[in-house]
Image: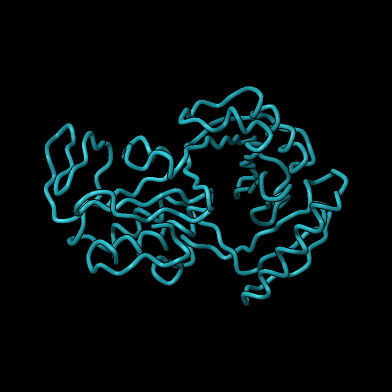
Length: 274
């Protein structure tokens, strides 16, 4: 993606995985988790370094990158101009072999790819039980000290996360595991209990006072075995999703597998669930 879209869209900033969250005592289990992850990365030839700063201790992945998903989508669409068209505000009200119904008409085609992560089991009830929707919540802060976070930072086993933009604003999310029964839901409305927790996490990451300027939530898909779903659900209909919270990387990988399956009949790789 970096080669295709350029370093303005895909920026290699690296990422930090902390043992715990900034300012909190480091639990032995958190430290052991970071060590185990570092060992696994090294065994798979992925660059990893030990990390220690005022934010805390953990590991640094120098080759990791950040990107704006909207810019990625628009960039890919512009490259394919003349061969593909991108339509916004065109919901699919029905999906069947060879046809997708929308409020403006029916699109007929030889192959339908259903590229949905969260709520995939609602779009295609055939997949109910194979993929499950969870709610992820976030907030944005007013600007804090610039470069407080040099790159995306993950804490507490990766359940909490934050990054900072050029203006100094923090974007912070997490806490789903602490309210797990409530967060298995197709609802995308923020809740007070999770937002209160995220605000406390934001305080740890910011290291100073701030105001919250936005709150939101989104639906993501999870599978029981942790492998993304890529499968034929009907004649000429292939669905993929259930990225287990890692869609920026796993989504394009799964999409390529879905195209290979749908167009050429190439079997789904073992690292995906068929």
